[in-house]
Picture 1 (cartoon, rainbow, N blue to C red):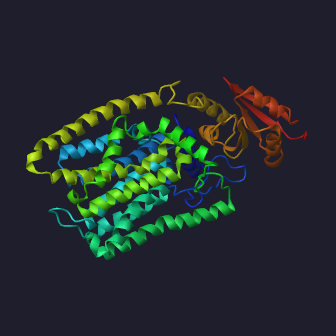
Picture 2 (cartoon, rainbow, N blue to C red; picture 1 turned 60 degrees about the vertical axis):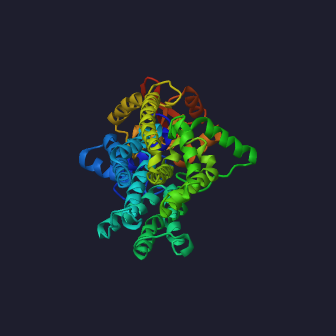
Length: 479
């Protein structure tokens, strides 16, 4: 549980419905289904499908989903370490990787259900393969391995398909390839034609899924995972979104004052072009510009979602890689600057560890601002077992409320149906009862119970546990 549990329940519900409803990969389904089907348009649900596959083999346990996410994340961080270590010493490489890995937001979501983490891991794998095959190394020959090319295509393609934000990585690579055809820029790309082929093949993966997802949105319930750009109603709303974002989320990426230092280094890179390998310089600039533009365009989404920033972390990595190239070219007379930078990395690592650990503890401390749980999952899980004993399962249409977030109660109860929130009026409740005929409703609020009873349907109390009540709806009397 914790902040943005609704987004996590959304993604975890995909795995749950694969597990219960059949392993039909091309028909992802959520719990809130209007009692018809819960098939939704969404980004590629590969992590959810892998989790459901493990559930089928080893039994339903969310630990396996967390483990799969963490394995994607760890593989990406290891690839980033290999990339750093190919151009700087092992201690600095490990220190820089850990500064990112100990980011508060990555500590929390790194073993959770958000697909952004899996996409980030795959993006770092793709970057490692890209450098290994196509960016000239100071003294190591580039690889022509077919297996590395295949890994590059799959990791980049799946990264973008799992989270559209990773398109920034794809555009950065493609942009460098395009500019390499302009002689005056002196950009050297090894194996340009194979790279072009790889990029086109990688693009086929997210493009194919996007077209399929578009079809699902036209033929099924499309209210979830909308892949659209939210627009501010006015400039005042736009600036308000920025104010909310800056007041809450930047330190979740890197702790203060590290976020200020990282931002300063982005700007510093622009003035060090002659000290940085040309290809590395343009990659860093492209990625930084893409990251900033994405923030400006999607600020309405960033306003209330910390995890949107996860797929933007490669901008830090590429920037640090470029700066390390500049530092290596310092004159021997400036040896002390290298020591200062090295010590600075170690200090930053210690600072990030302390603040990252503190933030993670707060996110799991009940009642803390960063925890923000809407439900006590232990109580709901106990209630679920009692419901199961009555023979009620996902094939029974249920009405749940009040649920301030999509899928939370339904997911935790392993049920499908409708949810209510406090903004639903009596007409909304009557429409649901008359159109879908839910067999049961689960109340966690006395106001909800009164509203259901005032609809004119006869209800029988079947089960009560703490603040949760289960009612059977009788349709013999219709209002």
